[in-house]
Image (cartoon, rainbow, N blue to C red; front, top):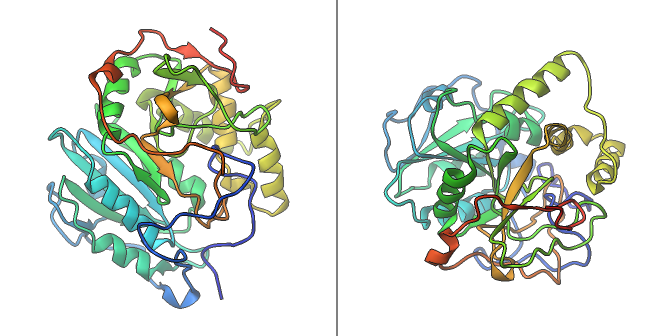
Length: 358
């Protein structure tokens, strides 16, 4: 019996691509993705103690989240996972191959529980068996089932005065060796702008006005600002992210729901998920409404050929069925040139239809 991952098609595909299909690539792990059966789920204590020291070490260790929350690092990599051990390992290996310029790095692997309170034993074993050579790796298990929304919204809670960069990855991604070099660059260049809600690492995006592929900005523009976030590797602007979390808590405490925005393909996807009683998994609608209300944008890279700093494998899961856009040029940035660092003081703004507006 398949319990963790669902094979039926979902209309929402990581706010990225849509249209014709291509078989999922499995070059890193030959064959079909692991589908976790109910036999691999195990009981796990709600409260548990650390399996290692709190210092920055190289081994992945099981730790309560409070042991990691206030640890001072330059980069905090948050990996959210549930029941895809092979996907998780592929992502972790790509993170281990990245260049961090000798900065301090902490990977936090957050494992969600099933709706009946158990944990994927294979996923937990994969995380704890991984050795991160570039920094520390902590593994956290949620005390209750939080779902994809809870994974996104509750896993980054640093001190309010933190200077760290954080980036959130779902487990079916791989990263470019230069993803952190890029993040440091754009955070240093644009991180103090109040209209920048965060930084996406994906190199290609569909048009969110109609869901068609793709947003094509002339490549002489090295970056651009876009109204809709890209979740295939997202690094929040700290102050704006905290403000969004506070706003969201206030409206949810009052039992309110953010209005649906007009002329956006995600509303169609949300209504489809809601018919399947899974609308609560799409936290992005509230984020899109909030950032539109605040006139905030996500900064996207715009390398030649739509090369990205993160690549989504679109494997079986809540929102996808292992399919990606056939016509998309979709590859990772494999080299770094000094010319990439010559960024404009003010990026161009692009609307959800892909048109440059100013």
